[in-house]
Length: 140
Image 1 (cartoon, rainbow, N blue to C red):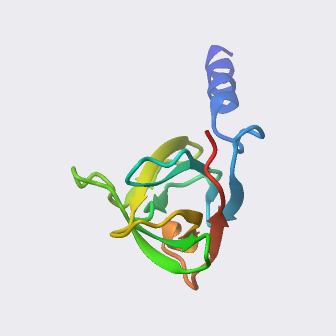
Image 2: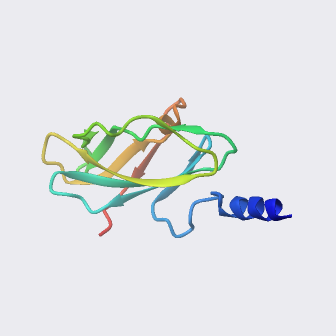
């Protein structure tokens, strides 16, 4: 009986879905539930926060984007590159029924004033075709 209780307690702690209070655009791709929110920009770039959870019973690939598209307030597109001086952004596997959070700064080589930052969410789980979502103004 003690083993059954421990198993039930562990299952109750496993990931089920993203917190309803998690800010940002929500999307499910493959086994991942994602919430992508724009945070306060730095002087050098736009900042995105990724909240993710694997709702499947098996591990899933996760490759947070190292590039993004930016749209200026005037409607021009810019290529943005993740600021990753330690080369820490690499594709990984996320275990079944687990979740996490990551924040990435994206930079452009010019002064931009971005209205939106767009990410191909399909690429996060290595799917095609591309599926772009855009997040708007930064939140404090």
